[in-house]
Amino acid sequence: MSSIEESLSTEELLQNYKEGEYNISKLIKPRPNSKLDNDIKKAINKLDSLEREESRLPGLDCTACGAPSCRGLAEDIVNGLAKREDCIILLKKKVKRLSQDIMGLVKSEEI
Image (cartoon, rainbow, N blue to C red; front, side, top):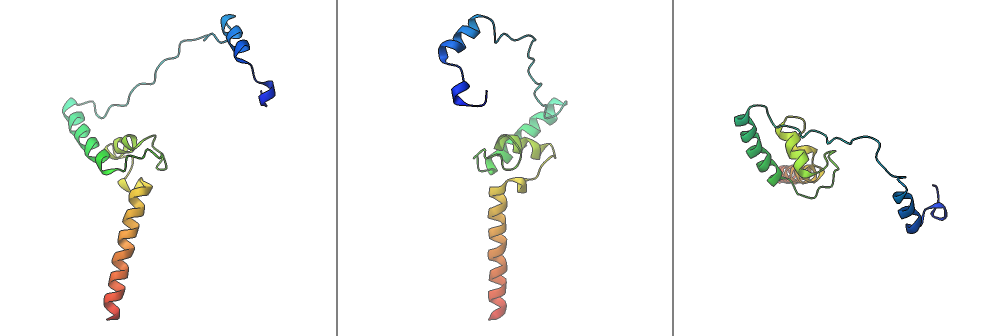
C-alpha cells in the first residue's frame, strides 16, 4: 500500500486477522547469541573486559559506530573486531584533546 488512503482500518485489520490472513506459515527461530569465548574462564575474563569497555563508552546507543548499542561496540572491542576510536563521541574528544595539545605546542614555540 502506497498511501494513507489505501491503508486498512482497525476493523479491517482485525477482521483479516480473525480470518487467518496474518498466520505465520513457518517457525521463526531465534538467532544464536554470540559467545565471548568457548572456554568459560576466558569468557568470564572477557565479560569483565566488556563491562570495563562499556563503562568507558558514552552510553548513548547512537549506532554511529555501526554497532547496535554501546554494549555491542564494547563486545566488538573485546573480541578484536572494533576499536574504542570507532565511537564517534570518543573520537571527537580525542581529536579535540590532540588539537589543544598541538595549539599548546605552537604557542610555546612562539614565546
